[in-house]
Every structure is written in structure tokens, then in C-alpha cells.
Image 1 (cartoon, helix red, strand yellow):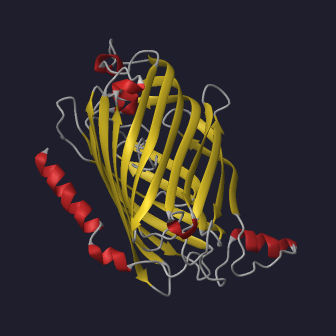
Image 2 (image 1 turned 45 degrees about the horizontal axis):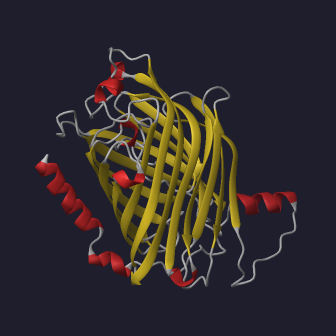
Length: 397
């Protein structure tokens, strides 16, 4: 729908407006006046800890030993470890982060993923990467935003993802780069479909037992955030074009454009009150495999659509917007909260937008590590005929 795309263009311009350039964080870490759960436990157990020397390089770890979540199929047991560190001087180098998350439902769903966002000294290079290997069972519903719960069928598959990117600093917050994207799906099967053939089988591309996509990306990045784990101000904009050419042994020839914009407004300098805005457009072109189509929680961050399960909506193009208000409950920053609202729309089989799917929710925050500003996040999302619960490390965007 032309109107929707024009409206979204206005949204993106507003998110990356020049005013955002002045909102550079003055420091990477919060002040020592803040408390975290580690500090509370150390004091309660009377454990002696060496004080951090200013300028000393060290890694800040955060851990969730066991939690419960869902990939859109069965409930799974999840654990998560994150590491935050600075590869250069704190005044001129952003915080780098690495996440490692294994999970299982003790049956037919298991796997792990590791995700990194590295900044070399002086922010000369930004090196994001994503590696996943999994055996997954999830629900799917066909194409578009008008699908109903009665359209549900089960997708089972094995999956390997390897995304590597290198972005070179050009000017101020601007980076140009390239990347390598590899997706492999095998043992793919659609089960318990309400129709025969299923919406998956009728789609026709990437619906065989095995599906591979190998592509290269061209990236334009603008990022003024000092700490992507929990930004308090600044902006982020990413434009990525992916192509999957025949000379890289692709069975289906397709391409995609992903435009992601985020803006963080610090509303109070004495108390943590932040308004976070996020919007993206994701469009695909050509013979796109079903598993590579845009969809809920299928974008690069795997964070969209709180209130709906992963893969609840899927289509050739996707428009998304979310806003979240973040605030401290205690003056020492140990406890906090969020309220959020989001909306997504995906094209139907006629490649037109026909419906917007909104969701709202709220969450709690527990400061796990104040040095890296990492929170344990508890979020409850409510969509149309849908409810989801999230527990994780670090903000979703």
C-alpha cells in the first residue's frame, strides 16, 4: 500500500532527524551510586571484591541460569550469558557485547545462538555477527496479517544461520560495510495443517525438505549509542541490502531490503526516564524461500512483536513500529519498569497491506550488572487473541 510506505518514510525521517546527533551519551557506564543485584548479594554474603581501577579493562558478565520461554511452539527452558567489555579507551570506544543462549524443551526443540556486536578501539570498525544452530518446532499460519489462530500448522526443521558483517567508520557516526549471510534449513516438514495442501506447501519457494540461501549484504550504519545493551540516548539507523546470486549456488534467486531506525530520548537527567522509539521496513523480492520471509520476531534482532509468538505473522513485506517508556522504580536503579506498545503489518498473498496487528504490554527490570548496565527483563505482551511472556538479558531494542 503506497500510503503505508509513505507514512513509514516519514517515520524513519523523524527517527533519524539531525537533532539526534547532539544526543551522544556522556559516559558508557552509570554512576557508582547505582546498585545491582550482584552488589546486593556480595554485601549480604560479605564477599570481598576488588575495586575496579579507573581505566582498567575487564569483562562484565551477566547470567540467567534457567528461565522459561517459547519460540511459538512448546515451552522451552532457556539460559543466557552475556559479556560486555570495551576494546579501547572508554571515552572513545563503544561497549562491545556477546550473548550466548542455549535452550531446549527436553524433547524435539533444542539449540543455541551466539550474537556479538564488537567495536574496535576508537570505533574504527563495527563487527556484528550472529550464529545459530537449532532443531525447532514452531507454529505458522500462512501469509499476511489477517490469518487466524484456526490457520495454525506446525513447522519442524533444523536450522543453521551464520551472519558476519564488517562496517568501517567513514565520518562521525557513519559506517559503510559488507557482510556474508548463510541460512540452511533441512528436515523441513509441515504438520497438522487445516488444509491440504498446507499454506506452506502452496507457497512454493523453499518448501522442499532442504533449503539453502547464501548471500552478501551491503550495509549503511549510523549509530551514536555508547552502549547498545541498554541505550539511554542517541540514535541507530541501519540500511541493509541483501542479494543471493546464482554464482553462490542458490536454488532460489531473491533479494531483500531492511531499514531499521531507533531513537532514544532521555526525558529526565536526574532520574532514569527514557522514551525509546523503533521502526523498520523489511521487503523481499524474487523467489523468496518461505523460511526467509519477513515475520514476527524473525528480523535481525529477533525482538519484534511482543504480544505475539515467533512467526505469528509472515509476508513478503513488513512494516513495524514500537514505542517503550523506561523508568526507574527505586532511586538506586536496582528496580525499574517499562510499558510498551507496538504495531505490525505484513502483506497478504496479493502483496497488499490489509490489516495492522497491535499489541501492548508492561515489564519489570532488575539491574544485574551496573558496570555494563545490563538488566534482567521480565515482559508481558498482549496481542489480539494472544499473550506472551519474555525473560532475558538486556533491552530488546
